[in-house]
Length: 253
Image (cartoon, rainbow, N blue to C red; front, top):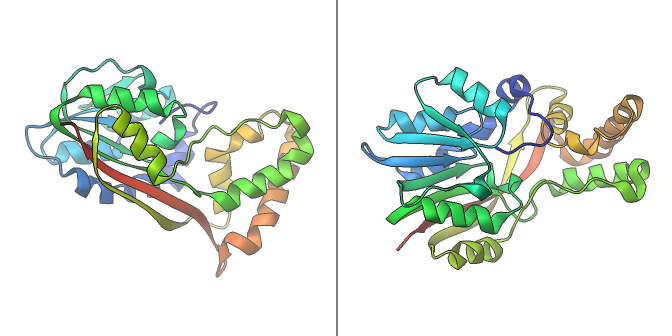
């Protein structure tokens, strides 16, 4: 998982474990086998990397966040984790499969990342990935923008996420020689943990919008965003994030 400013790994592990728990579905699509060598791109704190290893594969976790890689190494010291930029990977026909869960939407240089994943695969290798697709967290992003534009004006920070459509991303993969066999964009309303679930989520994943503001303005702006989202994303007193996921399976001929 790439950098925003820094990642709060304690908050991530305590409140956002749904990130890797929901990833178990795309693991079934990957179907790792004993003896295979697999690359996990955007491995975060390593939980799914470990699950792949438990199925008998030799797995390498790769992430651009020092905080995430550091936590992954603490969590699973027997696994190999590499710190680096996925757009600059230099693997060449080394892996039977490439896996990625909930990470590629942080990598705006999508074409170079796709090239790196394609280059990493052996001929006949497969790609199994899932990440935010078109329309992902639209309500959350709209609320943040509508509030923060009043604080930032024309200096509003640029979004750091990339949520493509099916046709957009499959074209990216095909441009690097991958053959897409399956692609599905679907809604996944995702319950957040606790009374302050939405605040915790924003602090973890969208805080870069708030960081340039003075502390008191950050606090006030966050309260306004939460107030705007309350009637939209709170159901029976519980917060639900409006996730949409893009799941893809492809092979390298």
